[in-house]
Length: 231
Image (cartoon, rainbow, N blue to C red; front, side):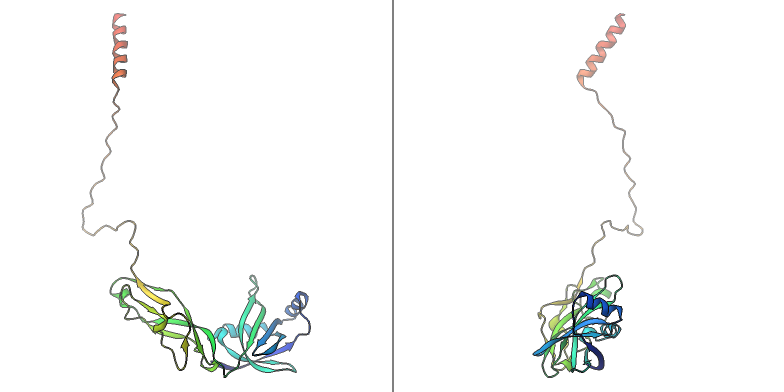
């Protein structure tokens, strides 16, 4: 849903790595806002405010107002961002202007609710395949999240994107047959567990190996014995 949050931004007259480093050292993050037929504008924003939006319930789907000093005040969404892999700080933000009267395509999280019958009665495993789907709607109608009840799922059954209830005028964009989750059989153990009360057969005792001599070897030994007797 659209939010009444307003984020202040400072226009940037210069770009480049050196300017970006200077901004970050001063506690700001470089950003760009573009879209709906207007020129892209380079700005500087507070990275902590951006992180707060990204970590909110609506996340990157949050629509907020960007108030550029001595410039426009317009609804925007975060469409891309870069983080420092070590410090986990925001390095750069891309924002898109939003026309609140025009439908747009967004990704919305999908959560499953309920304990499937295939798990509690049949011993299966509930496997989640997709955690979000794409939908089309007006900016003010973007759902925070979508839910689907999986309590009736039995072994081998699945819920698909087309099964997810959509509110208002929200329309599915993801493939209707995309699997959200399904019930699968547990993998059989490599070694079967012993049955309680069953007798375990004793391990076979290996018999000592008997090495048989060949006929030639027997003849040679007999000849040697004859020689000893003659002596």
